[in-house]
Image 1: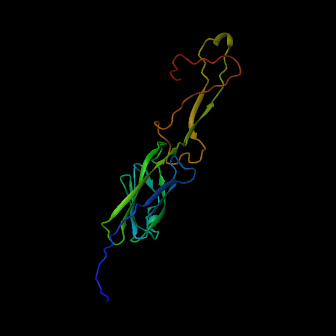
Image 2: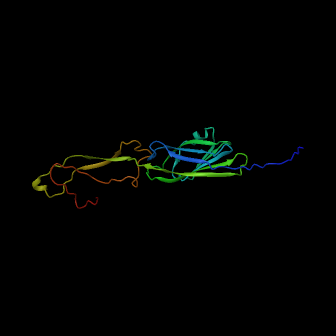
Amino acid sequence: VTNDIPFSVTVESTIGEPTVSAEVGGDGYFKEDAANIVTIEAATNDSTDQLTTVVVDGLDGWTLNNADALVATDAIASVSFTGGGLTITLVAGVESLTADVSLTPAADTDVDTTNVTVTANVADKTDSSLVTSADTTVDLVVDAVLDEAVAGSQTDAPVVDESVDADNVIGLNLSAQLEDAGFTYSGAGGADGPDSEALTAITVTEDHGTLRLSDSYTGD
């Protein structure tokens, strides 16, 4: 005797935590006033989930250089960059993303931006109400670039009589002006202001005698 017993099975959707990473290209840091790439990678835990957005927070003062190029890829639907926040919205069904984000630090500063947060958000493909996320942090280190250097010159060498002028103040007819420092990226973003670069020392090399600055000199 065979009896057919009807039964049902309910399969509940589950969602796994995604993976996400961010790495600065090149030597791992930015040069002042120069662009570099931050490579962002994100992926779902399994094929039943999809990436919805990747969000980067903490980019105040930075510039995004390649929004159009990012949108041109098959996986990305839109890119929004405002208020120091970058949001990359994915097309439906995307399970993994590698995005090379081109950024430039704030002009004329070598202040590092630390603990920038990158968050990958995912949802279940069949139940969009089932969501989760994962995040990581990355430090954007900015290496200073000297924009200008001081070039000194002497118009005419003073001629003095040692018997008359030995104890007098002698004008050396020296002058100085700023010029391009000659480094890669010197002058990029314009010349730095006084809060970024400063003259720190004056060095005079002499063959004979003793150089003594006048009493009015107030520098170091």
